[in-house]
Length: 539
Image (tube, rainbow, N blue to C red; front, side, top):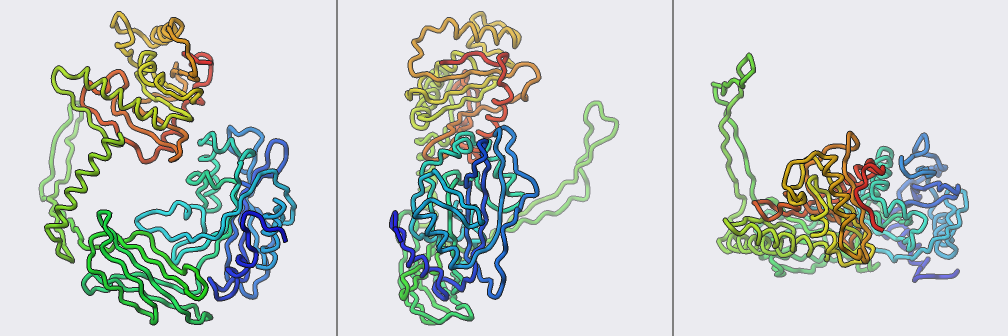
């Protein structure tokens, strides 16, 4: 057997062995694949989950989708989902062939991949806590102790690049897949093309609880009916304000183990370690317990509010109620903790402003121009930090002068620069006579602006489109979007248009659902793809 990339078949076989992590008999395989325009088959994502199915016959491959899955604008592509089961010995041979020769044959059809795969050794994936583990979006029911995964990573992804470079394609595919199986591919585009083996830990069930005695924690351990007790150790750590406030390491000798903690100011993490096999059997992401409960009580008033809106025949009645809130503390908070919380809040506020994740502009009288330049400087800083692959500017009032003040400052040659305007109201800062003009006149004015632009356009790859007529939809919000960064897709809400940023109170704020914003931009952009919408394009 040829071993590549550190692949160790004996170690993988050990993880599958009865009583090590669980009692597995079969592996459920779910294949998500694509048929490309050249009729070749390409793996999109395959997950193999070890399960206990004693005395059950293996299930032959069957399609979960009744008809091919189609992504509207991905011409010539179709997608399918197969599911079946394999015995442990069979899947080990299949994985060996995948590792050594790049051949996948689990469903009965031999597919020779041209892609380069890199073996990733076994790693442990915890269940979600209040802190989400992204990989759980594409694993199966990783709710309890957690799972080990073994992965073959598609290193090049050349065949499936359209799904990665055009996020709206992947989002549409992911939504259609989730109608059949709960796999959220759009949340983990880096896993496209990969093969993953998931081994859920079922040999023991471990649970961290509050002991109800001071700040102590309690670990409950229950073995599988077929499992033999073994030498376990629990490590637990509590951290708050970058200080390790509590740590312990105890041997687990009973079904319940008390974990004494001196403090309870922050989240804790815990790991149950199998000393005999050198494996994690349970782990918990940063977690905490409820220390106070807020209750709201509403009492409805006997008399409603009555008023009449001009033009209405009848009065409008609104039931009025009084609301009372009560906070029930299960533990006392020290003044020291309250001071720490206030200081952390101040530090977080300063950090958000420094990273331009949340910036308020509050120009004083006579200082609006200075604040405007400061706001432009913040936009340019974000473009310099995140715009290496692309910057998209979405602003209903956007004009040529705004683009010069922002996108032209992108220092990266051939970064994908896109700008979208509504032209619904003229940007007076871009109109020399400051007179109100129509959208068609403004459109022509913008074309003339770029035609007369005094620039060598070195390293600029930019397209500026406008919504004309009934195409697309009317829009109001303003966004700065970075479609591809090391952190994924990022977006900022501008709060106002580029021509007025900093001149009046508004907030520049990083948004949470950046991919949804980018998908919406792409959808509108694709609808405005005719010559009549194009203001300027270079090269």
